[in-house]
Length: 340
Ligand code: UD1
Image 1: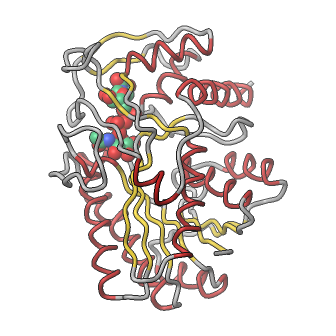
Image 2: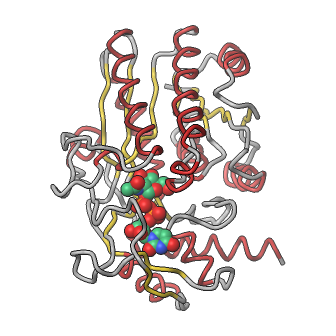
C-alpha cells in the first residue's frame, strides 16, 4: 500500500492520519473541500511534513470530480473520513446527514469500483453500540437502535460496506469504530478546529479555560456512575491516526473478500468530571464549569474492549489521558497565539 486517498484529510482525524501515513512511507492525497476545516490546518500539516500536502479541493460526493481524482492518482486505497458529525445538528437537519454521509460513501464506492481500487478504511463510531449496558463493548456487541440520524448514518454506511464486500469479492474493507478522539499533534501545528460553539467536551474545556467561553456545562450529574457524570473512552488522536496505518498494513496481508470491524479506544472509561479535574491538574489552569441537566441522546457510559485491535492489528494506545489533555491545551494556546 503506497498511495492513499484521504477524504476529509484536512479534518481533525484526517490531518493527523496524513502525518502518520507519511511517517510510515506512504503518500496521502487529500480530497477535502474545506467546508468544515481551514487553511490553517493545511499550513500546519505542511509545517510538520516539510512540504505542502497534495490536496484536491473538491467534494468527494461529487461523482465527476472524485472520478477525475481517482483516475489521475490511481491510488492503492481510500480512507474515507469525510462526513458531518454533529449529533445535535443531525437531529435538526437529518437530510443533511443522510445526504452527505451516506451519499458520499455511495459515490466513493462507485468510483473505486470503476477504477479497480479495492481497499477502503471507513471512519465509524462507537455510537453504533447505542446505550449498551454490556461494557466494555466488543466488536461482537449488538448494534443497537441509533439515538440520532448521525448515528444511523454510521450504521447504514457499515451495512453498505458489508453488502458491497459481498457483491464484490475483490473488495477489502476495514471499519474502524472510534471512541472519543481528543488531543492534538504534540507540535501544536494541527488539532481540532470546531467552527462556532464546540459540541464536544474537550474543545469546550480548552475554550472555557482560555476564557473564550463563559463556562462549561457538565451535562448531568445524576447518572449511575461513581461521580454522577457520563463516562467515555477518550483516545489521543495520534494513537487513533496510527491505527489507520496499521489497518492498511494488515489489509494488505489479507485475502479478499474482507470486511472487518475494529474498536479504536483505550479500554478505559473516564467521567466528564474526571476529565475536567485532570485537565486543571496537568495544565495548571482553571476550567469554569456548572452542573447542568442531561443532554438528550447521551448514553451513560461507553468504553471499548480493545483486545481485537491489539491481537489482530498489533495496535494499542501509547498516550495517556493526561498526554491528550496537555496536547489539547497546547493546541488551544497555539490558536490563541495566532489571534494576537
Ligand atoms: C458523540 C457521539 C459519537 C460521535 C461524536 C462526534 C454518541 C453516543 N456519541 O460523542 O459517536 O462520534 O459525538 O462528535 O452519539 N459533555 C459535557 N459538556 C459539554 C460537552 C460534552 O458535559 O459541553 C459531555 C457529554 O455529555 C458526554 C461527554 O462530555 O458525556 C463527551 O461528549 P462529546 O465530546 O460530545 O462526545 P460524545 O457525545 O460521547
